[in-house]
Amino acid sequence: MTGDLLLEARGVEIRYDDAVIVSDVDLQLHAGDEVALVGRSGSGKTTLLLALAGLLMPSAGRIDRHGLERKDIGVVFQSPSLLPELSALENVALPLRLAGGASAADAFARGRDSLRDLGISEDDALPGELSGGQQQRVAVARVLVTGARIVLADEPTGSLDRRTADVVLASLRAHCAAAGGALLVATHDLHVAHALPTRMEVNAGTVAGRAA
Image 1: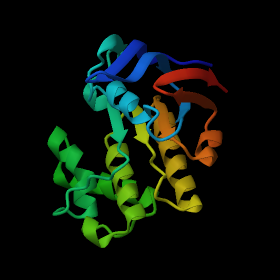
Image 2: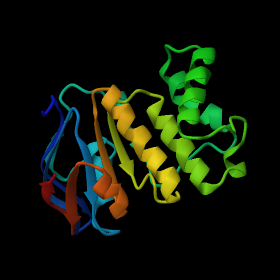
Image 3: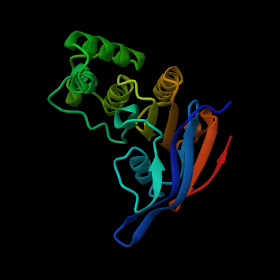
Image 4: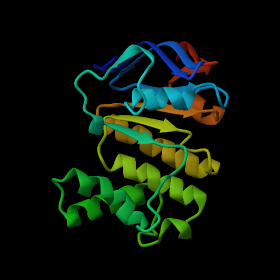
């Protein structure tokens, strides 16, 4: 059963100079949706995710978030982008501390739980002391700890082995289910794409369709 409409793109186009990167995209995300956005590198997947997150303004069309605030949308970037001077735990707890409303003890406790869910026990390690796959899992934990209702993830399993990728995907799905939200994963990994119930294909900047 389809839940409440959370996010909607209508006729969205994105240009860089004279190049059209995303063209005439219509897309809806409802509560409970778990969608794989598939397509080759350079097809426009990342650009579309940034626009849906509100980090990039469309050149044409509109994106409605139906009452959701920016904090309700979490983005897992393809590059972890961790702060190098902060430990893994400090990186994960940081959004809670910046948002206010959480004590340091609560932020660290929630951050530690989020890391454990993703198989990271090296709380005190700096990003440079972690492998690329570990850094990516810390970046995922940093998004999930915020309780975002919509998670937009750009190749979140790209640097992970199959077993770890399955753990990350399961954590993303469980989070969105618990939050009554939606998950959109941009990927070229067919294993990930087939693990999600809905697939949308991006080809040359256009969304070709939606298939269960």
